[in-house]
Image (cartoon, rainbow, N blue to C red):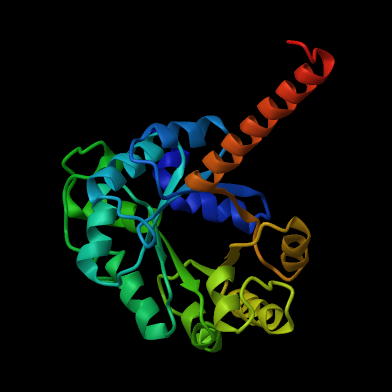
Length: 275
C-alpha cells in the first residue's frame, strides 16, 4: 500500500488546498466494480457512490469503495441518513469519505462528524479488521488514529437554512469540507437551475467565506458551465470537479455514438444513392 493510499482522503484534501484539480465520478447506476476500474483508467481522482439517489446495496458499495482505495482513488459515499449505523457500515466497508446530504445545522454536522471517528473525538463503533488495512487484525491504538486521519467529512449544504448556518457548520470539529449542492439550493431559492442568480451567488460567497475563516475546503457540485465555475473559483471554491454520473456519461457516449453512425450513413447514402 502506497503512502498516498495510506492517507486516504487526506491526499485529496491536500491537493485541493494547493489549488490542484481533482476529478470525481458519481456512481448511481453501475452495480459492479468495473466502473471503478474505468474511473481509474480515465484519470479520475475520486468516486462518489450515491446512496441518496439509488437503490444500491451496501454489499455493492463495499466492493466499489474497497477496490477504489486499492487503486489509489478516494472513495466517497453520499449518505442520506445521519445515524451512526448507516455511516459506520459504509466506512467499515471501505469508504474514506462521507458526503452528508442536506445538512442545515451545526448539530446535524456534528452528528455526522462524530459518527465518522472513534472516541474520544467521535463515537464510531470499534472494529479490528478493515479493507483499508488489508483486513489485518489491528489493535485499536494503531487502527483508530490511522482511520480517523484518513476519513474526510464533506457536509452538503442545499438549503437557505444551511447557508444561514454555514459559519457554525464550518466551525464544527471533524468537518473537513463544505460542499454546495447547486441543483437543490437554486430550487430552494426559487430559481431552479439558475446558478447565475444573485441569491445563489451570495450564498456561495457566504459559504466560501465561512470556509476560509475556519480553514475548511469549499467545493461546489451540480454546475457544468465552466465559466461559472471559473468565477466561483476566484471566490475561493476549490477545483473538485465532477466528470458526471455514470448514467450521464453512458447516455452522452451512447448518444454521441448513435449520432456519429447516423451522420456516417447519411453521408454514405448521399455519395451512393443507389446503394
